Image (cartoon, rainbow, N blue to C red; front, side, top):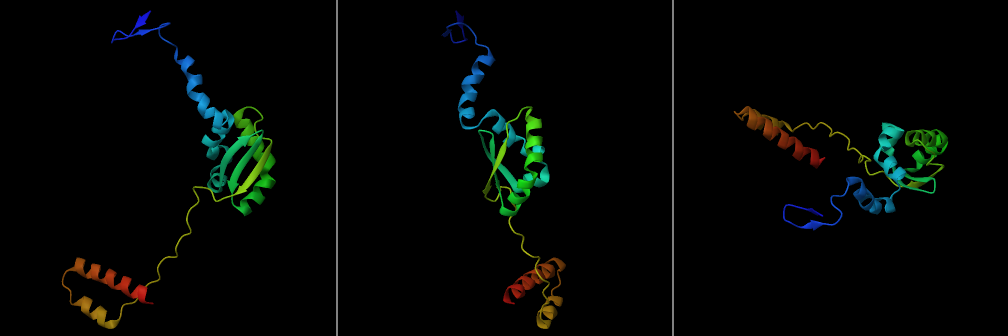
Length: 155
């Protein structure tokens, strides 16, 4: 019988690491199949950066891969479905994806809409002349930025 440093006994001696793997992976594989987990982990490499930026795999069940994407992207993916399934299945080494189901949902990595750059603001003549009176260039630049911010919000 094997013992550890503290003198505790272990029945059967040390266990191989491979014997512990099923107990650790079973809870994860109950929720996601191994093929589904691999698809989700390797999604950008499977479909390329352009499609990975606008889509996100959600679930693989019974040969149907559920993808989150926006409406226009779903139309494009319907036309690319045979090629996409071929790429995914080739990467997995078996036929795991037969069909696609599209869910209208913005992918998590979608960039928020960008604000247009602020339009240039001209300061009134009296503010310009007051800024010329300031001796420190750093202070003058800071006051000019402040003035531009104030007059940008007024218009």
